[in-house]
Image (cartoon, rainbow, N blue to C red):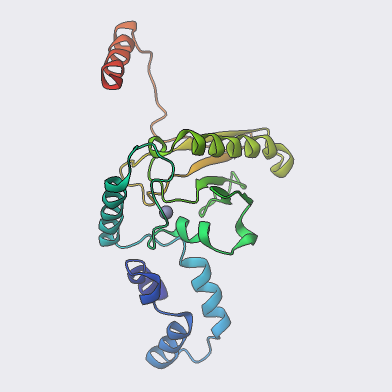
Length: 223
Ligand SMILES: [Zn+2]
């Protein structure tokens, strides 16, 4: 029930969203939930608000924002290409004071535990730019260096932090169904028998002709 309110609010600017006090009052007056305390509602909203997907129309705001950013951007790989996006939970965390859920941060990147955790891979983190950069190829060289320096610090720390013998790094660029279009690089601690697979892992041997065709298409695209 609260999730429906929070979900609808995700399409609004922060100043237009319901406050925790308003949600608590709504539960008490409209639904007779007199036994529920303010702190219970506060804790629930604080946990849930960042991880609920925004409504579909909020994504239209994202593309409008990107178009505006593109218009003023001289170099598409300029790392200062995008500023904070009001509708993006990663922008909110990146700009926020929540130090307890931040592993470490610099002026331009930060590292947090993934918002959803695999029980078989506890300790998954994501490395993100503070700015609302929407794809790996939209980050400039300096930002890429900083992001991957952070990734390697995390991969090096996985054995000591989680007793994980290894890790897997992956990242999506505007893939179908991707819910959060703010660049983030996953680092997943790996354990024997964890069953972790990247979907679509099935492969078959590729002929030299097929591999040459792939290489040629990419060479052509790269110009
Ligand atoms: Zn963002």
